[in-house]
Amino acid sequence: INILGQPFKAGDFINPTAFADRLYYKMFGGTHRVTRVGVARTFQNVRLFKEMTAIENLLVAQHLQLNRNLLAGLLRTAAYLQSERNALERAYAWLKVFGLAEDANRLAGELPYGHQRRLEIARAMCTGPRLLCLDEPAAGLNPRETVELSALIRQLRDEYGVTILLIEHDMSLVMDLSEHIVVLDYGEVIADGDPQTVAHHPAVLAAYLGTEAVNDDES
Image 1 (spheres, rainbow, N blue to C red):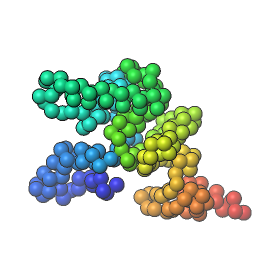
Image 2: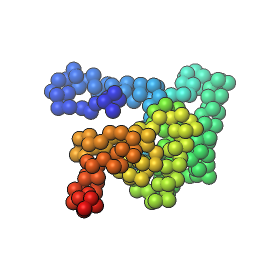
Image 3: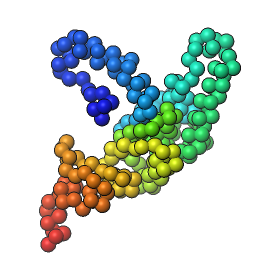
Image 4: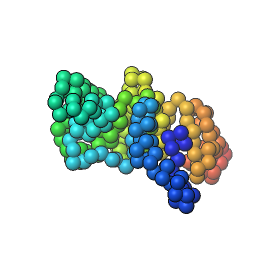
């Protein structure tokens, strides 16, 4: 995570030069540079453009891939129109993958919560990432929706070759998807390894089940 840029610190506000540099990076450099190298992310809270349709949300995500020549846009050149068609085709393709094709022209804010979660991931995929960071994608989902989401994330990994960095409290989802797990407890790493190793790690059992529960099981 540090590679993607660290948050502001108190010292940044004391040192005007440092603050200006970091503000410029976050406003004009950081996000675009991260996207260009193939990294995309979703947020713990859904952050869609709710007054736009589902398809429009996916088109917005592709602005870096469009023909941005001002003159080409004004003249509606063949290259400009082709870039628009490519973006539209890509958007519809990802809506289909995520089972949202029928929602293409519905406002994002009117979609069921589970569909909004999927739409947010579909939007991230429109940027063509090699690394997809998902921040608690199962938050607020019911068990059936979580199972469906797990299948979709696995499809992104296995069929599209996307590396997934998952931050999640739903242990069933974590164990179902992960090849390697790092467990944190109050900001400290307490376990690091494959799912089987982590699932039986004493520190993990104590943190998630409670020391008394672990002792009762052993007795």
